[in-house]
Length: 270
Ligand code: SAH
Image (cartoon, rainbow, N blue to C red):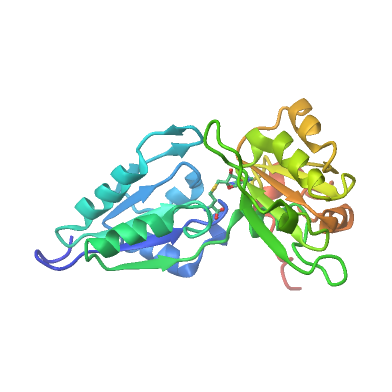
């Protein structure tokens, strides 16, 4: 605990995709210095294990549709915890500023006059696609990337610029798209995207139990349902998906599932 009366500070920290080795060094240092860590459901157990014993950990576990703590209460919790000079780490899966509501929390802290800093993390779009063998851009194949959410509140239409999203020369990455996969397909094809463009669904990306399914925009929703794939699921639509046939380095025969957690090992020097 810091000196009484000292101003506390909140660090909004990206936990990255799950593997602790894919965490920023700054994030690791802050996890070791924190007085309290407030974390989401998507933060992996392996990353949480880096929090020293004795440091309080508070789960505000947000599973899709089951927000155990509503966002405004999380905001208030952070404001309350930081009083008394505590160093609070707010740990979020991936990157705090990419579909992580980190900016909402930052605005609340700003309003309360509480100093904060943000530590970026590797977001699902980069981590999960890389581990599935899909480059987000590739010269001559894809010249850009778009990240969108496929989530919509009940009875609401997804408001996206479908024409812009149906650019065949950009890769489209859809977060939280599982429950609306059929609607997303319909709108994209309706806006002119080729139904045969390659598409992929990645579940538990980067983890040893990663599952990926490669299809086309036309058949992906049914194939995902048939395979019984569930959240967290990332959808990638675009021509670079086809490169995974050659570039998948993670889910290979050479790397059986039980060894995937030790993926990055150099051979000893002789
Ligand atoms: N801030 C996070 C995103 C939170 S939104 C980030 O930057 O990555 C949650 C969505 O992220 C999920 O619905 C899914 O689309 C994606 N996601 C998170 N973890 C994932 C995983 N292990 N495998 C596949 N997709 C994942």
